[in-house]
Length: 75
Ligand SMILES: [Zn+2]
Image (cartoon, rainbow, N blue to C red; front, side):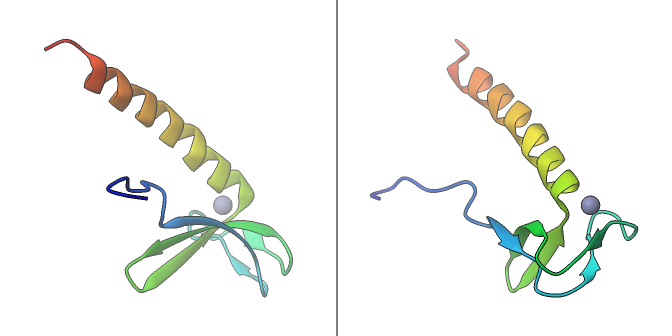
């Protein structure tokens, strides 16, 4: 891997092990077996439903594209 770092190391796709609630919205129910987005921050991990997870990914894509544009811009 050398000095390349993953920006997305803290994000993984997971499966809900039991019924609980989406961290993004308490009205989003995660049922056992549902696909979830897991975000690990230090020792905590937060679970998000598929809808919220896909929104995060869409936002991150735009942010990354903007970052790439900035990096490549001629000063
Ligand atoms: Zn949600």
